[in-house]
Length: 415
View 1 (tube, rainbow, N blue to C red):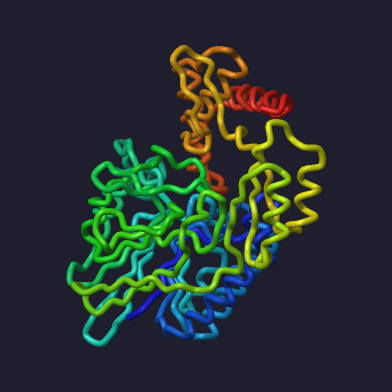
View 2: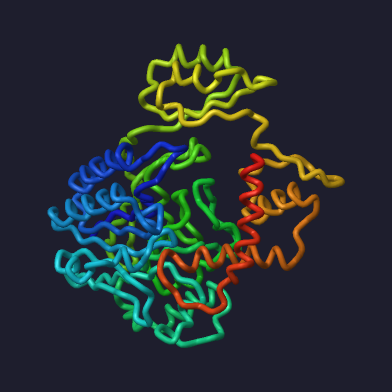
């Protein structure tokens, strides 16, 4: 059996105000469908974050509808789980009807994970679909009815242990989590949001599975063993990915003990290119470039002072493919504390960036209570996933309002 393992499609993504839905994402779907035909895969696995927002745009919804429709026309099986960017309720709408077309979309978390067994000759391959989870959801009375699950790792292990798995099957898990290998975090991209240190699960939690198709991290990579893998996002969603190669992950299941993994290169609608120099140098480079239509550009100005009409003049040369212009010093911030060093904010965790921002506003570091508040807001953002979830322990509205007011003040002041 052969299947493509995808993740983090993020239909509806904006790249520096450039909508990807009507351009690159639309073109990518057609290229992907060509690969489905060429490699004659039996199935497509999508490991979460189908949409970029919990309430997707009409354009994003049309993209997913088109992808599913074309795969159904080709009589391919499709296995889908919601990620933290998706609403499980919205994503699994009319899922029973779609099941009749071999399209299986996991909805809300339940005690028994949705699973589908496929027979290939004498071999049974079972796909287990695990929606994005957090401890409270797993401990809910409707799921495991436990109040002792304090971490994501504990929650994942408890949910998996509750499943009635046949160890003689080739068991494949589809999941969307932050997975580590013996404490070592996967290599992240700056196009991911609210990940660092949140929701960690060690890959040993998945020892019962023969292949684990992961989503959540945008760089394609293995985690621990070869058969626990992130597919990565299919397109370039941030200039930090400029040196990454994008490819499809093709999985061939010969047997339970023989699973082959291959990277399949497909054409990208556009690649990313970053150019640095003074305004005059960047203008000269742009005039000389012959393949500008193949790229989206980011220009970094090294002028001591920002030249007048810089963006306008650069756009005259690079056209609408120029997505962003910034000064080389803009990414550097100083904490103004004794012994501090200048640090690249793009490499900071969200907690570090908030601490730096708070200090710039209040001229002091946040105290323990404020740090806990930030941690709870991050947790709440992960947990709600666009669905209504009754929880009397959510952050009080007045506390959220306090922090939001502070952030808005900073935005107004251009911080």
